[in-house]
Image (tube, rainbow, N blue to C red; front, side, top):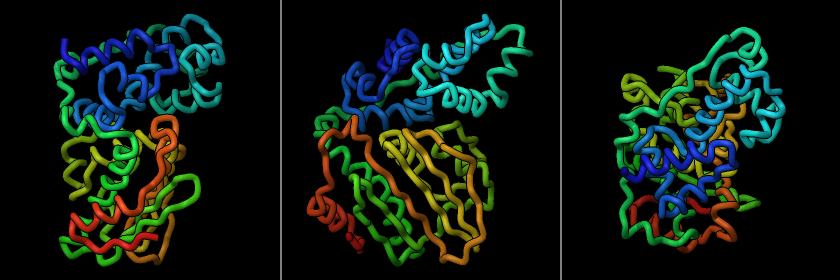
Length: 291
């Protein structure tokens, strides 16, 4: 049995528990950052999104067997009746009450055998990094995309702002995500949903796996894209979108702003080190304003 299959089985066996990324990474024997990144690359979606989907799928038989929605929400460790209902509708397209009333039977989907055969690809050397270094990797993963835009001549300003509560904001005046080519791509990227090959091609040089990993390891994230006279915004908590993609008219220049707060349950007592960040920026040969 490979490592990913062990993790999948562990999740299935503990599906009613409040399973956290930190716990699963420890079970797999890896640190949260590298386990999360490796899981995204192997499965195509974040650990938190995978667990949420499996919990919702497991909850349907209970729903059809007459269990109260509030009891199901508690059983599968959702924060509230409303949180469970919102997530359920987001995945299945109908509310739990409608499914309960109209569906006769439901066969729990098996975890794909193809997925089970994949491996977690974690470098044993980098795995030994401490949590503070890993937290800084979140910032670097986001910065990579802006720096690449600058090196290709599409971006002249990159700013990193340190905010209250250990939050950080990275902004640039690059091209921004090509939202107008396919507006449904934007929420899929950050929710961790599977993206078709055609949709992937429409995203240009966006580093999908890296941004998914940052989102999965953040308490909250807000992504704003300015492109062709429009502003697109999406907010996430623990890697899960909180509302549909918001689109408004905006004369702002092109660019993208990503603001996130590292998950304090994982990166306990870790704080941003400007000297370490400045050193990384210098090594990557690009001008970035820190403030």
